[in-house]
Image 1 (spheres, rainbow, N blue to C red):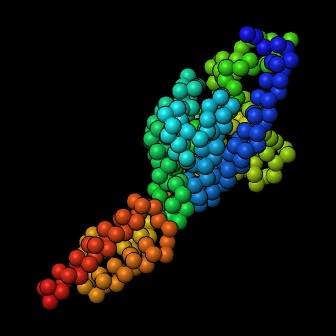
Image 2 (image 1 turned 90 degrees about the vertical axis):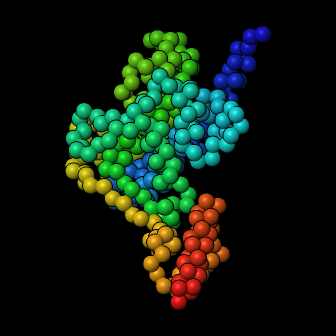
Amino acid sequence: MTDTPDTASSTSQFTAIKHDIVKELFLKTADQTYVVARWCFLNGLYLDFYWNALHALEKYLKAVLLVNGRSAKSAADGAAYSHDLVKLYETVRAIGSDLLPSILIRPDELQMRYWRDESVDDFLERLNDLGRAENRYNIFGFSQRPEDLHKLDMVVFAVRQLCVPLDAPFWGRRQDAPNDKTFRQMLLDHPKAVLRRVGTKFYDLIGRKGTVAVRDAALTHNLPFAPADFDHGGLRSGSSADNPVLYRRLIVYAENGTQSAHDAVGLAGVCDWLIENVQLSPAVKAEIHTAKTKLLAQARRHAQRD
């Protein structure tokens, strides 16, 4: 049974409504979060860079799934995506593997001495770890690599291009269409072209309608998105890291056992205080319990010697 013209028109109308909802809920907010992530990196706020980078990519990936007829809640096997970039990317790759990078290699035009090639999967795994909810409080610390901003740009550019119905006609139902290619075919033919038909007003934000601050945050050192004549200035090339406070103030003492019995008991009390008063994941809570057990064992050993 084929659709009548009225039925086809109605179906197209409701599909357009769905896509508009996706653009507003996911793509528009992803664009904004992406710009915030870049601003954080450019200004040395690396913890918030990873937090925002994860959530920007999460929303882009979910937008790809929704406009291509997939669920943004769970995979085909029923496993929930939640905020897991690796799981989301696995499904998106099944949709558009021919349009996505597998290895993040230093662009020829980028002069960066310490770049390390990395698979997209490994990069997303690092974002999962460094940008997860608990690390908003710096529970796990971070280790920033100077090339991470460029790697984020590369992945965002590739994924954002897929936020269209890939196998739908690029020109829609236009009678004067210059060809009958799909979005997928257009992207294969022009892999580095900026697909402005991906919705929202992202290009207004980074164009004349945007503020100077937003334009600079979005485009500075952004090779995939910035126009050729954009003045990028210099980028700090050093790395940065921050050991988590729980390691520095508790775990290290539980591991090395150099403190007195009195101090070991006091630190075990800090472990109790932490578990009772701070929301922690089961894994972190278990680590603190283990530290407490080690500290009390150290105190007993000191007491036996004395």
